Image (cartoon, rainbow, N blue to C red):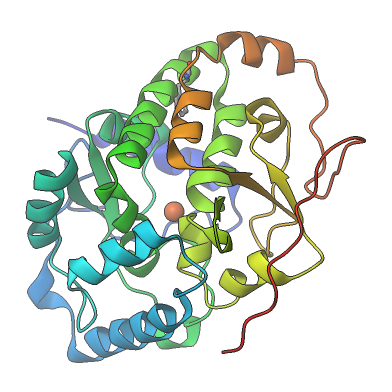
Length: 297
Ligand code: PHE
Ligand code: FE
């Protein structure tokens, strides 16, 4: 299939959006769905070593901070030593929840992203950050995508939620809901917190792949921690270059799945002419859950 036009459009939009106007990945080899081969043998020993360092730092932080489901799946994924081979993970993942991983050069157009999710394909970036970006990268890399997102795809309810999100995205493209839907992704899939009998835990990938925010989000007194409210999330702006000022907390994945099952069209309608709320808003009457006690290490 000829993809030149599509991809030219995609890059043009990016130019308009950002100063540099280019993405870091190599898009020259991808197919019409932005899929590439994960050329695993091309990763260098230094890259595998950097992966291992990232993995070890993060694996040490997850006990008591990530939700149990994440920790259990991560342990089974066998990704601690080197950059994982996506096809091997896909084998296990497909058995567990029917999802597969597809390799992509980096960010992909919204339509493509939603189509993948709606078909239970999770796009994982192939490139790894460089050593000087150990703590922070602007675009998602393989460590964020794989370590942060893939473990929860082994959970059947969460896996269904992500597929529903993809279907909802395809719909939102047609109904002008994209800005609002994107906030839902941000405040759940990327930065969501979940309750546990032992206190708050993280399930959002942006948190779980971050060395600093994983502690900050749970124990720092500064940010707000508000119980899940879909419409409130959709009205709330977010920061992409600092720790979040607000986190939304779910009770469990069933709650998230059920709360997002209804048709969002009326919500998009209502929100159309409403001013968005700053990221640090706490409305009168809203619950702000207390942080967990600080953890050592
Ligand atoms: N119910 C949503 C809609 O009508 C779809 C959706 C489900 C979106 C789950 C996000 C998460 O668009
Ligand atoms: Fe992500």
